[in-house]
Picture 1: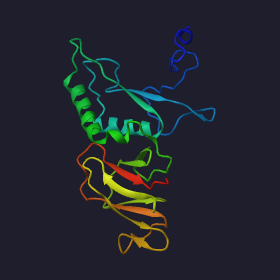
Picture 2: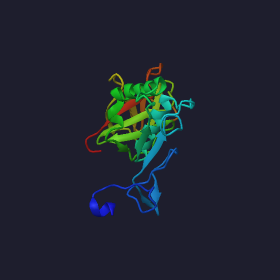
Picture 3: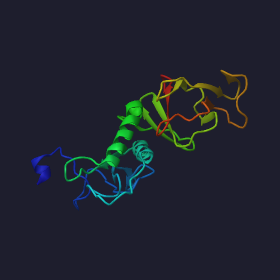
Picture 4: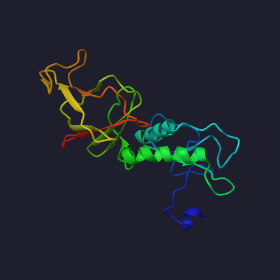
Length: 220
């Protein structure tokens, strides 16, 4: 009846009938979801503290950094994130919920383009990173901050520019193409040909999740 009344409507998979998209609840996929070997559209459904709606006595709030990571992980795996928050009986958000949303908003103010309109990168993610992509812009979300260097196998000769997204500061890089080293005299030992190495500051940026933006070559 719903589809007869509104043919273009989207229906999730919670009605006991075939849905247009999958909605894992309180579960975070770590890879694209499939049904019978074919990719499906999906949206992870989460709460701030495990309760749908306001619960005065529930203080098991997720850390803002964890929620940002879940958002990025959803996008990197081709999904979406639905985040629930419940107002009190007075119609206001309690201080903890408000603070959590403000922290996520502060991160998005600087890093929005790494998730909004983005999707899977189509490239292998280096260890301790989540990768998203919008056209020729590749975004590396660093789950752990490395010491000075980040090695990206297979990206030598494919990157035109690199910067930290929160402040727009340039990141220097060099390449090992199997024949010569570009931009510096020596490349870090042990890296295979085709590796792009980024030189990062020692101090981790003071943001919930640091992001590096790479501009890929025009023919990518």
